[in-house]
Image (cartoon, rainbow, N blue to C red):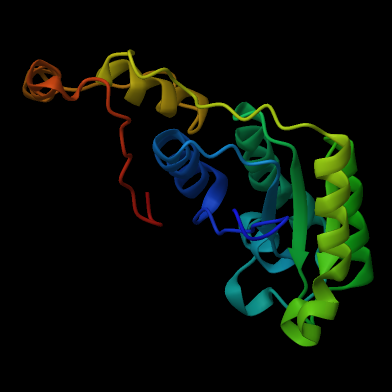
Length: 204
């Protein structure tokens, strides 16, 4: 941060798991205030979220892209909850079609987020030049309002509840008395002001 005008870091996988931990734990403890977020997506992944089997991902399927877009839209929504401007970067695969890319850009425009295609896998830095320009322009014109989801003095139970509701779309959380007692134990031991870390796997 002291040596460069722009510093890029990978916050982790997903705007639920990775970004939430990055913002609520790392940024809180390190005093970091990100200026912009790039959400990396692929047409292939959108088609999978839209119900396409792995062996059908190389075939154009606009309906599946549109259906799978709901997943990407939620990631954008999650990032906005942290007060950060977002850009969608499409990591292009050779089987992606112009129609699929055009549809995705249109869907992104519909929720007010810019979508940039990147060919860095094939062309190195040159392939990511448009993305870099878009990031610089976004930082210049859209000031970050970086914030965490919850304050330090919120109870541990409420912190978990807030993440479950705001990031994962849960109505509420439940826990038996043993779990609630453990939360109280941790607070009594002086850990109540700590952020919480939600552990999950890619199958959760």
